[in-house]
Amino acid sequence: MSDSAVSGSPAPAAPAPAPVPDRSPWRSLKYRSMRWWSVANFVSNAGTWMQLTVQNLLVLQITGSAAATGLSLSVQAAPGLLMSLAGGAVVDRWPRKLTAAVSQALLAAVAFTTAFLIAFDQLSVGVLMALAAVTGLIATVDGPACALLGNDLVRTEDVPSAIGVGSLVHNAGRLVGAALAGITVGFLGTAAAYAANGLSFLFVTAVIPFLRPVAQAARRTAAPKKPRTKRERKASGGTADDGMTVREGVRFFVRRPRLLGLAVITGVSAMFGRNYSLTLAVLVTGPLAGGAGAFGTVSTVLAVGGIVGAVLGARLRKPSVRLVGVLAAAGGLLQVAAGLSPSLVVLLVLVLPMAVVESVSDTAGTTVLQTDPPAHLRGRVLGVWGSIRTIWSLAGPPALGLLMELAGARGALVAGGLLIAVVVLAGHLLRSRTVRTVPALVHAEPAAPARPALSTAA
Image (tube, rainbow, N blue to C red):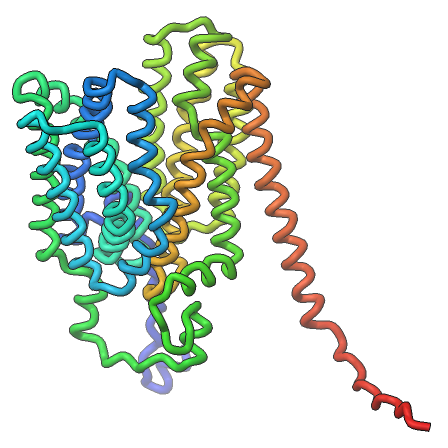
């Protein structure tokens, strides 16, 4: 007979099994606000891609110059280099829903203004460039505000799913917007495409007031939060007075090794490993003797791989910089193999996993970037990232083009892929060495007391 039977006390209950973490790529859609936000983003992305598709044709129509088309894109991107830090500070200082709603309304006003000028034949190159610059300036606030607002709608462990779903929505909106651009211009004219984009921004503006962030819902039932001490604010990356200065975001970023590592990995990959529209186009039409149809097939496979990667990335829960590095190195080695492809069939086999790895890496890196900083610094950290990303986007194509001039398409793919893998490996070795050094310093014997200084007097 057991002891419990003798004593009359009930046997202890078996411990309940630990809940299985939800890794569904669609788990972020269980939040009602996230579902509405996804619909709004789809509408907005479709309108944006409709306008972008028409914008290049419009510049060509007005100027007849391809160089002017490229200049308009550079003018729109330039504010990201100069004003992203200030835009991130605005996002941290003002309520996120209000900031996102105002920025979306301003973008709608720019789109409607452009549509009005086109309809009455008053749009000149100078005015178009000015409107592009204003759009880029507003985007320095709108980008981080909308990204962080979307993350606020789900719990932290579901942020990768929100980012993955956002990537799918982005790709779907791109396909729909590009298709609608031709139909809209053909039946209603160029001004209608800009007006439709303005309406899409107004739709997002109308949805934002009804969104309910998770933190706001939890705050209603949680106990009052104890104010942070000066030491806690300093440890989280802020100053003792928790000021909303741009300098605090830069200081946090440069003192955070994992964010610096993420910047290096992503920067090298962006410059030498992700401009497939350039490198693969030259490879297909050059050494592999394919045509426009063959490159169209490669582009389709890249798009499919991106969608598959977005779904896989949405299954992540707590991605790390190490995972981003591993994926970047794997993508670099796949790129080396693609550069050595003897035929188009072999290239197509390699392109799919290349796109999958890139998409998963993007989701993991974006999650780290948007969740690692403390909440009061996330806008400014994204502002720092926006400036760095603009540098990559402006410097990457010329650098890669020069490499292709020197080494050809195959050489550029092979050299770029090897460079990415080497940088990731070097970073891993450096981090391992640092980790081994720190414990050695911590466990070192304490130094002997300093001896009194000898007097120099006679």
